[in-house]
Amino acid sequence: MGNSALIFELLHKDASSKARRGRMTTPHGVIETPVFMPVGTQATVKAMKPEEVKATGAQIILGNTYHLYLRPGSDIIREAGGLHNFMNWDKPILTDSGGYQVFSLGHMRKISEEGVKFSSYIDGSKHMLTPEKSIEVQMDLGSDIMMAFDECAPPDADYDYIKRSQALTTRWLERCIAAQKNTEKQALFGIMQGGFFRDLREISAESIVRFDLPGYAIGGISVGETKEEYIGVLEYAPDLLPENKPRYVMGIGTPDYIFEAVEHGVDMFDCVEPTRIARHGMAMTSFGRVSIKNAKFARDFRPLDPECDCYTCRHYSRAYLRHLFKEGETLSHMLLSEHNLRFLSKMCEGIRKSIEEDRFMDLKAEFYSKYYGGQN
Image (tube, rainbow, N blue to C red; front, side, top):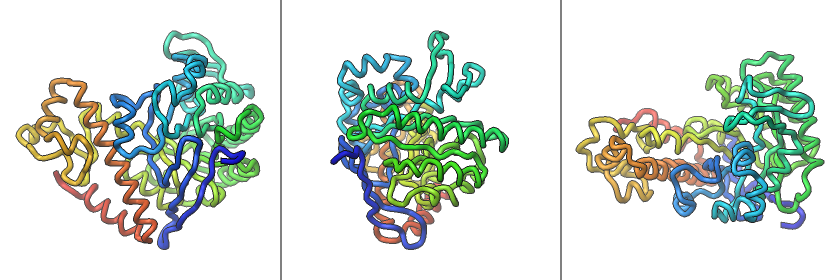
């Protein structure tokens, strides 16, 4: 790896869109992009063993700095040999900065130049999360990719607030860079902010790319805005970032949002969506989203998705999955989570192949026709 913790290769660009086929090399393995990254908030992808997560085709997972800092504490994870050892995951890990969770606390937090003072959701204890503290915790965790501490402004914030906020994010990025001590082991990504104002996005991008970091994220979207606003930012924001570095949109996990991101030149995305909806009896299938609770599945002995090769679809029927969910059995969450993660992983495999063959837009049209127009 030399003195860099991450190497990105741009392998091919789709002929009819901005979609990119790339490859990231990290200390814990190679990641083929575009890639969906399952979220393991509390050092676990909910209801799944690491071996099962791997079986879905997952190449990299996320850990959550805010939650792991509060419990069990990053010092305990450091003593365990880092997050990889602690959770028995030997592939790459990306950790967020904790910024989004802290800013989601609303009245329970106070922002200043220094950082964010907040009350723990666990016991109400007071904490101060600064750029330096965020990096310290992420170094304890030992993730392959760590995110800079940024202010995630509310989507309805006005121009002046967003202008101040993105400038603060840049100043915090400088402090994150100064605090990092192991650039050969962990790659630090910067985050572009600027809300839904193009000129502020341009200022933000210009101010962060000068640091020549290993990768960059587009922050402040998928935070409650309309789909039109989301696509509006994607139409120009990825182009403001270096072509030779990976681009990441945080918090997207539905097929349409992923396809739109890829179409506009994004390489990485993550979301709790596939495992969260699984716990509510929802599955993503080749022919659209399915609610396993539906009475019509009571005597349906077909696989959940006949086109899926996951463990769940190879061994269990819709009728059995419905029975498990109706009885409140934990196995329901496990089997549906495994299926949903495999569905998105397989979808990304198809996306990568379509980019290599210059037919990404054809795949998008085919997928949308089946997923959003299909019937079960």
